[in-house]
Image (tube, rainbow, N blue to C red; front, side, top):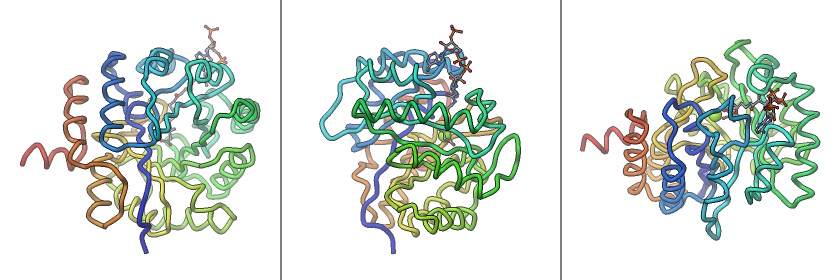
Length: 299
Ligand code: HMG
Ligand code: MG
């Protein structure tokens, strides 16, 4: 059966904006975050404390994080790639961060300029320090279903990186279909593999990019396997500049429409999402890909 309740982990302000050529103002980003929280989002990734030369759209990370009004019961997170990022996040008042690396060697070299081994070594210190400071740490595994540089990624690599991150002390793994090549049978097989390897349903989250239109089918399979944390991005924004061909994340409103229809509670008010996406689309100067949004606008 399906879970009665799931949590949406909103990545719009981070994954959603990182690949955009138009840089939104800090005020617009803060308004976007606030309105998502108003719509019922309780977990949200607000920015990345990465090298601004690598991700110019999020160069204002310090200002966004320090100016944000934190609300009771909402968990705000941000990506950090190294100690420098963790230090900035901590100074900006973050109490949760997310580390990220790929299950493929080439993507690690292109995205974080490190080998897989060096990434684990770097994160060992980052997670230890974060936990010492009382912060929570989430871990992303990218290229779980395929790599833009290597093609197929052996399941063994996915399991190895997942275990390595859990061993470091992350409370949850988000399994990324970075370039949107995963299909339902593969999702089921990888999730079952990780559960068989001893990981719990509570430790696993899913993160689908909808490049080839399989994201909602993949979400459904994850739900059927009892996964209760789903990453999504308002309007279907998103993509990784260091993963050629990657397009947007599965849209938050599309996921919530699916969940509402299946009787799974997410606490997110579907009715409040289209105006947020529309507003962000206007500011970015282009239409956003969400299917629910298009239907809503047409109606
Ligand atoms: P590097 O060049 O190897 O870093 O980059 P370095 O340690 O040699 O430092 C070089 C310069 O960067 C120095 O500045 C550092 O201070 C600066 P300089 O002395 O030359 O002026 N620097 C920093 N500045 C600000 N904040 C920092 C920081 N660290 C170093 N934290 C690095 C290595 C990891 C920093 C770089 O490769 C980087 O920033 N990468 C980020 C790439 C990224 O954000 N990609 C997108 C997110 S991942 C994703 O989207 C996938 C996901 O959604 C899941 C999925 O879909 O699968 C999560
Ligand atoms: Mg992503």
